[in-house]
Image (tube, rainbow, N blue to C red; front, side, top):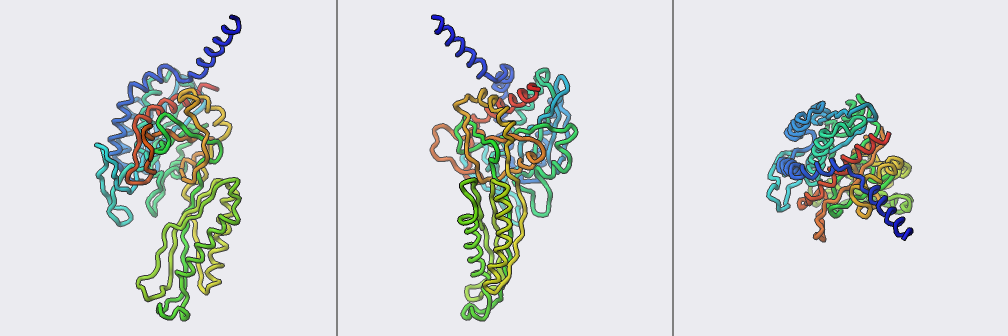
Length: 427
């Protein structure tokens, strides 16, 4: 009998410790779920591209002002930042959501489908939230409402960061996390830690995926320009073929991955996504241009791959009688989850979502400019399930058929709210 009582007490203690969510946070999150979904649908139906999120920003700012927060607009062009001070001084935690859409024409069959069109790189394109940033924005607006109604529970300060241009600013412009940091978004008050999430179409609703350390890749964009000698297609020996040189360069670059990169440590990718050359079937052109991306998850591999590409490209071109240059543009750093912060906050996520629903996952070669915040302060970035339970196939992000189950957003509101309270109140 004594042993039975002890077991019951242990189980009771486990249940209490596992129930990490504050009852008020839990209740209020449930009450505003429909409002969060309505916000998301509005943003979804009215998407705006990077650095052009003017109406999106106005709606965000209006909501934050209605909550009585200190709101700053036009941060990094169209970003919105709000401050919520708790009942007493303490640490500062930042919560970030990205707000921009993509030049993708939506095909998903939903009543709030985007029909917006605009001009992007001199082409008419459809615009849609084909990556889920509309859900991130709505979730963080919900978190702001929940926390603003319970300031007495907050020991410290919360900084809400609604970031534009996560997908990258238009050519010739600054934007995104880099510009926000440059303009001081992590200062005044100085941020101690930052949290962010990304909804995922391939992860079932109710689940959360995370990884300590490198979780998303550093992304480099590269441009290779090859110079040859134009000639008639019937007499290739009288010229230098830049298309042939380009093919040899593409082949050579892949050996950096297959023969020089320690892939047992981390993944790495070199992709040539675009090649442009020539105007006619019987003319060997004078030049060719290749554009591509490098994805790395380890700083040492990143450095090695960029060095070897810089050495290989001109050498291969020279070997075939031409010349070539390569230029790199960094788009994101490695999204690096601070291991100590993950260890500290993982029990909160497990308590809110249920331990069985929180999955340690492998890194991905996608990129995320949340990484720039993590270079300055410790950060934790995780993935929120948005795939319907009865769905077998999930259209990928950045595609016309991308779809998110809105019922997954509620968990995002609860987890982000509770992470904030637990981080600030653990001092």
